Amino acid sequence: MADIVLDKVSKKFPDGTVAVSEVDLEIADGEFVILVGPSGCGKSTTLNMIAGLEDISSGELRIGGQRVNDKAPRDRDIAMVFQSYALYPNMTVRENMAFPLRLAKLDKATIDKKVDDAAKVLELTALLDRKPANLSGGQRQRVAMGRAIVRQPKAFLMDEPLSNLDAKLRVQMRTVVSRLQKQLGTTTVYVTHDQTEAMTLGDRVVIMRGGAIQQVGPPQELYDHPRNLFVAGFIGSPSMNFLHAAVEGGTLRTALGDVPLGDRLRRELEAGDAPRELILGIRPEHFEDAELVDDDTRRRGMEFEAPVDIVESMGSDKYVYFTVEGERASAAELEELAADTGADFAGAGGNLVTRLSAESTVAEGENRRVWFNLEKIHLFDPSNGRNLT
Ligand code: ATP
Picture 1: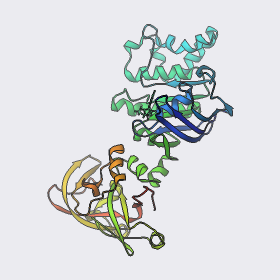
Picture 2: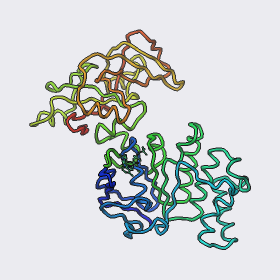
Picture 3: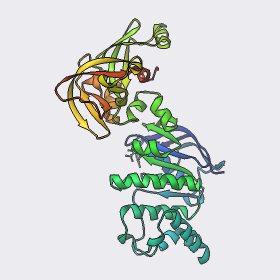
């Protein structure tokens, strides 16, 4: 078994920076887990502690049930793949991949067999005699992965392995990594700041911010049920729209009109010290051109009219930006969130971003009726960011 358990693991650097704070995480044997979050959130430090490249300040790290806090990296039986390929330029692909096995003093026949097997999995067989200089970026990264898998380690740790590749190659390599992980069934922890990679690659995604875990779950769960404003703004592209909403009786006054509250929420908000101000979150894909909505669908949502600012045709759909007036959210949480996630906050003065069907005839400069799905909205408490829906 090669499960990886972090039990209240923290990292405090000598200068006092707390990069990771009491992180609890259980990664099952064979699981593919992605650590994602904005720059500086502590994901690389977490990975480096698992690898043994950084000391653990407090807490316990167990690999395969064994405490490894004080074990040297080479004794942890794990392989790392970095963003830089770190291949030996004077060695062929075969020699590069064989290198860790030669260090382990395996015999030549075994080494050849292991390298040939790994090359087959990574479709590198035809390139085994080439030098790295004569390979493309994607091929080099495959060799770097090959060098990691020949050792058949207990776990793979990958730190932004695809971020040096151009956008198209990155998409191709995503499928290579995904297939490889499934084929080998090796426990894998993968660090990225790219939410698309996070959503497409892993069994579970760990969202970090400021050295702490914000939420852990399968990608779809994080998308459907973000626990707080930060996760909601971080997952999804373009980002979720956030609007100021004032609770008045059973409705919410917003820039898009009065939004009815569901029974459960109404009861909760009526009870005691509930906030009188909320943040309404709506994903761009939960809007539609009102002309294109059938009656059945229409009943599940509501409509508003707003001036069209910009239309971006993506071919398969249209990103349409609307100017919405209304009260502006001032919550410091929103400002901070915007800086962290790059999310656009309609209520804080930005435009409303919608993703409408390609068939929509929407044009810049006109006023347009837009529908949105009330079953998909999120409501957040601005004082702590908690998702109340
Ligand atoms: P990025 O995506 O930019 O690589 P990250 O999420 O991987 O970011 P880390 O590299 O883990 O973040 O850094 C977490 C925090 O620890 C940051 O605030 C960083 O400045 C700090 N940090 C990292 N290394 C050191 C160090 N050696 N000494 C002091 N602080 C450090």
